[in-house]
Structure formats: C-alpha cells, structure tokens
Length: 165
Image (tube, rainbow, N blue to C red; front, side, top):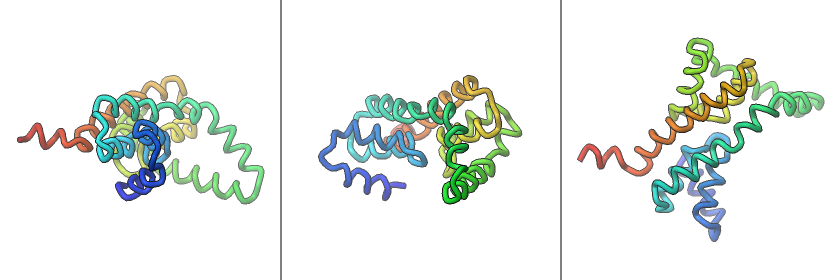
C-alpha cells in the first residue's frame, strides 16, 4: 500500500499536504488507512491528520449508501458495464459473512479492522446490497471509521512503539 501512496504523493507534488491526505482518504481501497500513512510520510501533525482523514473517508459514504443501487441499475443497461457491476456485486457479497453473523456490530468491525478488502466503501456497498437500514448502517460505518482511525493512527505514527518503550 505504501508504494501506491508514494506514487500518489509524487503525482500530486506541489499540492498542499492536507489536500493530498484528504484526496487519498476519499479513495476506495486506500481510504483513511492510506490517508494516515500518507500523513505520516508527509510529516503532518497527527491530530490534524486524524481530522482530515476522517472527513475524507466519511464524505463519500452517504452518497454510496444513497446512490449505489441507482448507479448499478443504470450501469446494468449496457453489456460492458453490466459485467463490471455483476463482478463488483459478487465481490462485495463475498464479504458478507461477518454481517450475516453479527449484523450491525459486524459492520462496525468490518469497516474498523484494517484488513485488505474492508473499509467504509466496501461496508457501505455491502449494507446497500444486503438491504440494511441506511441511516443505521451509516452510524455503524461512522464508528467503524473511528475504530480504523485509532488502529491506523497507532501504527502509522509509531505510537505503539512509543507506548512500549
């Protein structure tokens, strides 16, 4: 992940550091996790980085929750994009075990524990595809992002090492 983040940072050379970490936090797959790594690499103050990355990660989530079905329906009208939507839907639904087993708290953990293929974007997509209450899902996703922020803040800024020493 660090290689991708360095590539983005290099591509945005000359752009304000805060804007870079905000943009990275907006992106699916990288999200807040990538934003905090970028912030650490760019030597942005942790408290400032936590706020910027949180806002960047959570900003697209209401749009995903509200518009994903409509976008999928629209894209299914064309042969080329239908295959992409079917593949994406299958990929999202392959991650449903935790939500089926634990419900909304499972959604919080799914979003909050920084593992490959998890996060707010994927959690939002799953919530929509599984027909979860979107307002309730948003609250659990919000707290999941906060959990991810605590975990990634500890690792990205070396806080764990400072606590142990």
